[in-house]
Image (cartoon, rainbow, N blue to C red; front, side, top):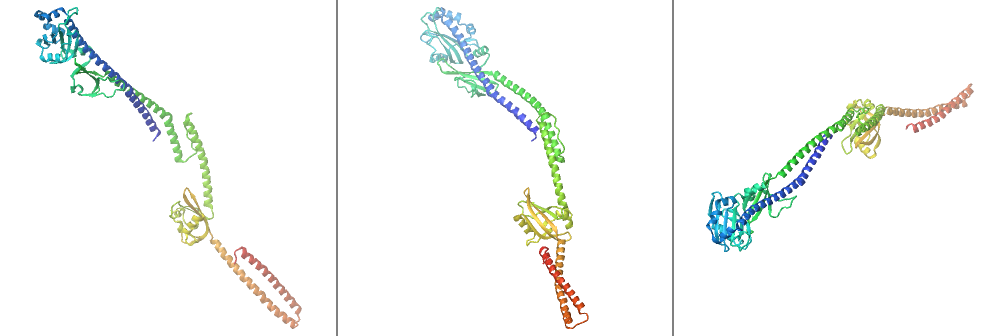
Length: 562
């Protein structure tokens, strides 16, 4: 992979890791913190709703206490005066007070007077027996007769009702109590609307156990930054834009009666997500800009110069001209590298020059050698026949081939060593001894055999077995040896004939000398003198023969004679 691609990948990896790390940290710290704040806020808002509900109940209790601690009411419990009813318990009273129930009960728990007001129809109705039964069974009736107030929520025939019970006493609070005054308001009678207006929250009321409480909502099970209240449950809407808090409200007897749920838009959390997104977008923009600037810097100051250095080195390597030099401007590490490259190129140039000179010397010696030279090669572990890779000019002249022709001929077809197994024995001996001298013949282009004396050497070049065979033509030597042998044989024949000739000359001389000594003649003295001269000549010839015999033995000893 190229450096520019690696740089781009590293930059992308760095900024992606940075963005992912910041996002995970934001999600794990900021969003968890926002969720914790959100849950705490939702819990506080739930308490606000409960306080608003208590406030609605307080208003009823305050009104109820004003009526219960009034002399007219105290007198009404004794006389059951109809004038009290006509003057005070009219429709406007119910409408202005916003109550649905006003009921007077004596100290025995028996109703004295009571009405339920229908706010929609604006009519007063008798207290349903079921409501009266609820007041009795849940312990509401009677609690106000002993001077104690009672308040809470009960389940009326038309739904949950806020109920207040106050003992009926004189206006100054003195007694004894003549009974209990009950006032109640159905929650459906605008209570939730008033609570919503008061708290600016969306409030919903459900019966205890109603599955609609969490319908379409996702429970929140993890609370990383806040402690979940034990009596509250929290939910998210399926789109994640709202949070809901639900809690149980007990009735006046302490039994679970209602579930209040408040729904809120997750403004803080959603604003946090938007802020994180904007932050990540800004960070991505900064990362892209920084990456482009960094890439432009690396491209202009490093990558381009490295590519120029690479191109120069590749060009020098392709043309093989180590006298060329690279040029990188600047005063940094790359310019130092170019200086080192130039130093290396100078060393390579000197080495190349020495190599060329060495090759030239080798080639001159190889080509101008008077002996035939054949270089063969084969791989280290191959068993096939070696191939000819180089020959000198003398080999081509001697065999009558061109060099290209010889490179395609097997050496076993050209070289015939005087060994029993021929060329294969030569290779085997070379494997064992690494060098060998042997006579043999070379087969020329015309098929004639050229007698040679060869020396073969085995060595290894980069795990390739190399054989060099130096062959000398001994045709002239063999002719010379043949002529020399013939000369020695002729000398031997001459010496033998010379020895016989001396004896043949002396024998007639002895006969002539005998006749001279027997028969005197007029020229005896001159004849004897001539006989002595001839004998002297023969003696000198014998002496020369002895010297010739010594010379012949010397020649035979030191020049190969037989």
